[in-house]
Image 1 (cartoon, protein in one colour):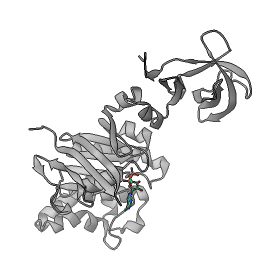
Image 2 (cartoon, rainbow, N blue to C red):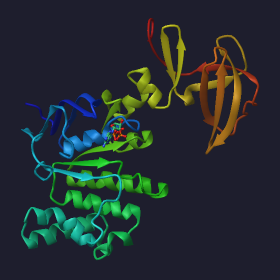
Image 3 (cartoon, protein in one colour):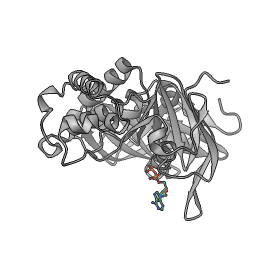
Image 4 (tube, rainbow, N blue to C red):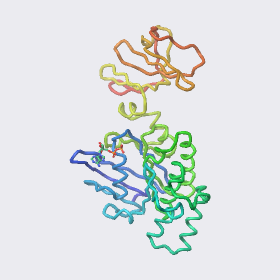
Length: 323
Ligand code: ADP
């Protein structure tokens, strides 16, 4: 018997006979915030839709709190969902939207009123109670969507890129709001994103999905600092250098640029430009491999076209003799 809340085993799904999820195993513990990170098209939304009962997998089992829910209709699974796009009922007020799931469950009126009032207060939405969704910003709409998903007190909430349509300057605030509220409520969450930075922030555990397969599971820092394969490293933004049967991954921050010299790889500076507080440099090694290097502005910057020596301060290798 597992102590996990959500236990998914061998989940496979296909669209038009093309496999989209391949034998996915995944666990979410009670109260745990898990991030499902992967590039566009890796199958994240399909996975969430299978969990929510909106899509039928080809095979596999989905257990929540010890019971198999794979055959249950969406509303009986005990799962809340916050989709990517604002999805509120446009002709209902904020209060009516948040109350919706409770009314479907035919909870008594005083209980509905109390629960809705509590959530509006916790999510700092009280002043919007009588407004319609069109009268709210994207971020406010997503907070209402979270309140609506939490109202029936689900065991698990699925968040599908919930900040995608929110202006970047509000995203960080909304992310920390979501995390605080989910922790306060003690609700477990599976948060889908293709954004590496967001994948680092929200979850206690990261599950990396590549081409429909689980490629790595670990704490965000384990996954980011110790990618399990070259494919994971590439998705996380590492440079890949192939030498014979050996592949080495180096983060742009770990590619140091110096004068040509012994122990340094000869390279040419193809381009350099400022990005925020950093220089981003595009380098070409003698075998044609292109590398990115990133380091704080302030010190001297190499000139475009110049010959330099490149050192890897930290690297991770796969293949014969790899560390
Ligand atoms: P992600 O959420 O990671 O971007 P999706 O689950 O949306 O990935 O898509 C995974 C794959 O399934 C993609 O190749 C996509 O083209 C395909 N797919 C998704 N939805 C449909 C659909 N309704 N019909 C056919 N193929 C689909």
